[in-house]
Image (cartoon, rainbow, N blue to C red):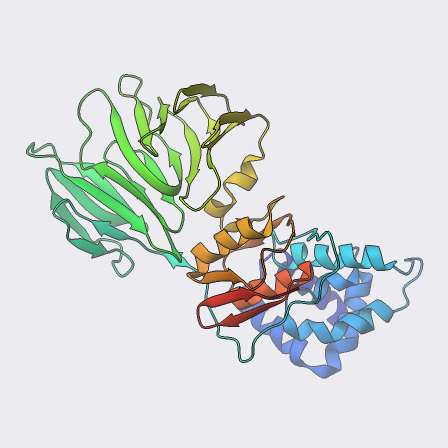
Length: 384
């Protein structure tokens, strides 16, 4: 009965579905040395490689060697290559939608901590609202029900989102900016009903009421849009002086960070027209426009889930290089990443839950054969 219960708890932990009571039960069993053999046998009886129970929770590390040595025919002894892949896959199991297939073109020393390592929590919901007169409101501390009025619009926090509603009183239209510093993300509803999700270190500037023939906003950073349909008033997202996206009613993601090598506009549904300098393209669902200083290219059959992973609470490390992954980590944990001797030639794959501390994430990234030092808010990738 105990082994069956442990199998169940391991499965729930893998799917990130443990209730509070189950989490407490899981931890109590795990901390009990007398239960180690039950954990080993439970892991061995599961259909997944036994290493999968050890890649995320530190107390489970002591079970690794015992589980690997557990004789459970007809499962064959794993080769070193398969074992490495299985350990990487373990991360995917125990982080829910975790990291997998960490790859490096050469063998490198294991990742190491500077002790004692500071505990850096994940980012959270929050933003700073800058009003037309320059005054600022920190939205992090405002609960549901907060409201104010401004230039004929009612502003209120509903379900953790900033929502604008026109009150039709006329007067001057104000221009506001909602911005997310590093370590925060936020969602808002614009005056026309368009929903916007802001990733960390991003901002959107918009009027308190849309008037005229177009609905125009300006974006810095990354955001996901669900545009309210209005065929008579196109929705325009201005990214730079040379780049804009025009829509009628659609869902799309824009990534335009100043320290990224390129900008990306990815269409989920509907249709958008992307203009970048002299280049113009009409995107279809599943297509992505990539824009650099040399022009624009359009990719088809883009994996949408990877593009909007951040909106769904995940890091997208699919097929990206170390520097790009570290940009995501810098923004979400509000840290600075530096390299002691150049950027290692490492390419990642997969996704990781963003609702974990930086310390937990670094334990996962240890599978990529990195070496680093974490001090205060600075992460150093060390000499290989």
